Amino acid sequence: MTQRGSALNFRDFVTELLATGDAVDIRVPVSPTLEVGAVTRRVYDTRSPAPLFGDLTEGAPGFRILGAPAGLSGVPGEPYGRLAAHFGLPRDTTPRDLLEKLVSAMKARPVPPRIVPTGPCKENVLTGDDVDLTRFPVPLLHEQDGGRYFGTYGFHVVRTPDGRWTSWSVSRTMLHGRDTLVGPAMPQQHLGMIHRMWADRGERTPWAMVLGAPPAALAAAGMPLPAEVDESGYVGALTGSPVDVVRTETNGLYVPANSEIVLEGYISPDETAPEGPMGEYHGYAFAESKPQPVFHVEAVTHRDRAVLPVCVAGLPPEENHTIWGTMISATGLDLLRSSGLPVSFAWCSYEAATCWMVVAVDIRRLARTRMTERELADAVAEVLFGSHTGWLVPKVLLVADDIDITDIDQVVWAMATRSHPATGHHVYPDAPGIPMVPYLTEEEVRAGRGGKCVVSCLLPEQFDGVTRGVTASFDNSFPGDVRRHVTAHWADYGFPAADRRGHRP
Ligand SMILES: Cc1cc2nc3c(=O)[nH]c(=O)nc-3n(C[C@H](O)[C@H](O)[C@H](O)COP(=O)(O)O)c2cc1C
Image (cartoon, rainbow, N blue to C red):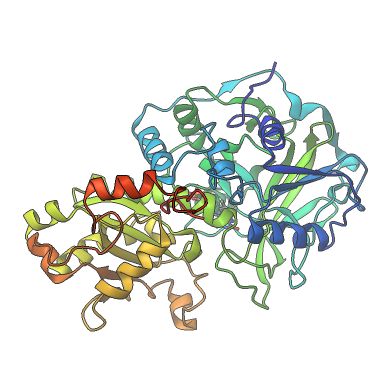
């Protein structure tokens, strides 16, 4: 028996997408060399159903690829349907409800994983000379990429030498050889931190990579939970059920039992190889490769007819925005609320490519604090920029909570009409930050600091709890009986049914 449901079983997730019309079972032959990438990119752009490539022209027969697993959906009324399915939630779940669910699971008692003797990921076990990653249809995703990417939607599993903490984290891996991968393990990310602990002892880091993982586990692995927190326990709390895990064949780690593909082995303490370039989350592909750690694969286990999930990173919206951005929003919201600041919500707009977080400020509570704009900006910067979450977020926009910050149109309007060009930008040159942000100078990249700001889109009188103007809109400019009459008679005027704005796209 294996766990069921779209949150805890990737195969069920795929079946559910097909059943709801939000995936297409592609039967024609498709090449993993650029064609998979091109189709998937066009799917993101056109909000088309996720492509399930069943007949790939390279790699051993039988393997499949799912593109755009968390792309936005074109199914009417369900733009976030694929995202919601990652958590077993109704397909019409709003970002607001999803975030509240993610935050409340952070407060809940962790539910540790359950060890089971075996599972579908053991349907095929390959060790020794049988390990050959090129048997898989490893895709070349963008023309500019420095290689084929095996892991764009999978997570690493590593454990501290004392066994106290097991970390799951999403980070890309490029095919390097028949049994090797290469990819980043940044020292600020938990993968890099745990790798350093082993390397400092002169030892190899026992490692596994899970592809086609339970979707809720993948999302949690892309979430900046604090150090020493096991993502598996969070997933248990989030889904209300422990994740079934099995022991790897070779290195004593545990991986979700129904995963599609599991790679196991070790990270070399000192060996590096050039990795990249790759089209990235901020939307650009740069020309350089960088030396990164080499991952040695000593065993591969996989399900029959295994499905490799693929994210083709680049312009929003793709999974770096819909999954990573959403999970950053949840940890950021929790941090800000827990700090006591007058914050009601936080949201990384997908359109901003995980380069900004919009923070909704409760104006009534703000007035009671008697804070100035500078004090509020500094307090938000202090809470966020010093944290594991805030390291990832270069820009923060402060917006009054009359704005629905999950609606980019409203955010743009607030920014244009409420942010003072002379006084609204607060810059934090010493704040540490992710060095991948495209506008950073070479000096800032070297120092790992700078390029961070808080932009206030709050009007001066809002600090005194005063509202000067009323938003001129359908909701605010007409009495309720007029609005109800107009809505009720919409078809009588000759209009087609209108989908009120609010939840884009
Ligand atoms: C689709 C996707 C791709 C990602 N790619 C990378 C990556 O290549 N490198 C990286 O450091 N983080 C990447 N992330 C973000 C990390 O998974 C995220 O910051 C997470 O918090 C890291 O785990 P940690 O908090 O345990 O360090 C990606 C996230 C997603 C959802």
